[in-house]
Each structure stands twice: as structure tokens, then as C-alpha cells.
Length: 324
Image 1 (cartoon, rainbow, N blue to C red):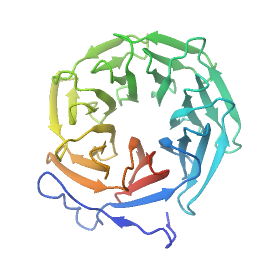
Image 2: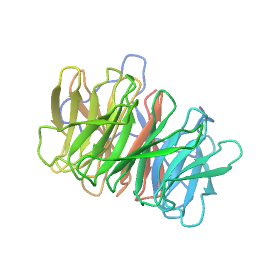
Image 3: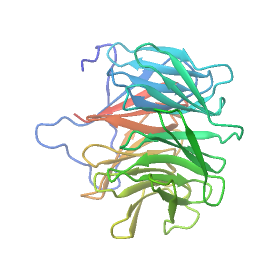
């Protein structure tokens, strides 16, 4: 993908807790690029099937689309009272949005921009993050004590009460087919059985650590960003084993976590005004830091091969780190 010359790419500012990671032979070091976008308070992002990037404009009730080749962004209104939060691209190529204002799941057709709203029900669950499992079912969290699933074929939504009430936050599917979510308020992660929707709770060793988001790697190990402790932790379900690493710096606040196609782990850190994205290599157990704009506030990460994307809700920008 060619990037116009007017979009200057900022080189990384490495501040790792240990020796810096070196790129493999023949590879360039990762590069950071930020895009100013239309809307207000972009919250979550999802690479789109057309090469662009979807993002939720939370404060304007719209779904945005960025074309990285031109730097242009456009907005699609989701409905009166909308306050979109999470977004993911579905197997059908459409954008699927968790909308807290509408208390609904919203589908936006990538070609036509047509909007379809799936109402969750009478209880406002504070719909949070969506994720598709490998069967094509959409799972989502509700921060007011719920998780649920939507069958895109029928439009049927089923809600479940989360263990211990309020707190369900990030959610992601594992290659094994299981779905995992984190409870920020209750400091646990949970494994969902997609067949019946029942969950098993697993608690990180650090008490009240504030598990915020989760992401399984190719080996079905679950990586967890811990907001209160500043740890990146990993749970291996096969071995029933936990490990944890403190992010670099004096007072890290781990928010989002994402595992790329090479099983490199990416975490956003709200430490100080100069927010950053941190990459962790499980093989060497080393961190590498990428500094962003002042007060960037990246709350979620998603990517595609060679690219890691986030939304800077504090600056009205999207950011990409290109690793190839």
C-alpha cells in the first residue's frame, strides 16, 4: 500500500526495559503514522475488507471509515441517540458495532453504507466490545454485568448474566473456538463455551489487578492487559499456568492488548501525558516502546498482517504501526 509523501512517518522512539529489539535481516524497523480523522472521540478501530479502517466516532453517533492511501475519512450516521463503542469487521465484510446509546448491535454494509440495528432489549447493558467466533457468531460484552451473542443469519440475540455482576469489558476469540472476556470491575477473565454460552472463571494471581482486555495467541494462550497493576499477563489454559510482566516505566497503566500474526503482543499504556504503545516479544521477554502524540489515549487495538491499528480518542486521530 503506497502512502502519499505528505503523510510523514514518524520513526519509533525506543525506550525498552532492556536491550532494544532488532529487526530481522532485510526488514525495516516498525514505523508509526497518525491520521487526523473526521468525527469526535474515535474509540475503537477495525481494519476493513476494502483496505480501509473502520472507527467508532463515539461522541457524534457515527461510524467512520479512513482510507489510508489518501488520508480521507468519512462518517456514516447510525441513528438518533447513537453512541458507538466497539467495532469489528465480520465474515460478511460488514462493520459490526456495539452501540451504547442505542443499546444495540449495529451492522453497516461496507459497500452501500446501509445501517441495520439489532436491538438488545429492555435492559441497557452498556454494550462494550464485539468479537466473532470461528462459526460466525458475534459475541459481545455489556459492562453492566452481561455478555451475549447474536446470530447474524436470524438476528436473534441471547443475553447471559456475567459472573459477579458489573465489569465485562474486552472480548476475543481463540483459534480453538472458545471465546474469552475480561471483567475490569471484578478482576478476572472468563472462557465462554460457544455451544451453550456457559463460562468458566480464571483469576490472575495479582489481586484486584483490573483485567481490562484479552487476546489469545496462535497457541491459545490468553494475554491480558491489567489496568490497575500495570502488568501484561499471560494464561496458558493447557498448563493452567500464569505469568506476568510489568510494563516499562514508573507507573504503567495497561489498557488494550492485541496479538499479531507473528504472536508479538501489543499493549497500550496510559502512563503520563505521552501515551504509548508497547510491543512485547514472548520469545525474548523484551519490551519495545512506541511514543505517540501527547494525550493520545489509545483504548483498543486491532490489526491485519503487517499493521497494528489504534484510535487516539484524546487527539481525534488513528494510528498505525507498520511492521513490514
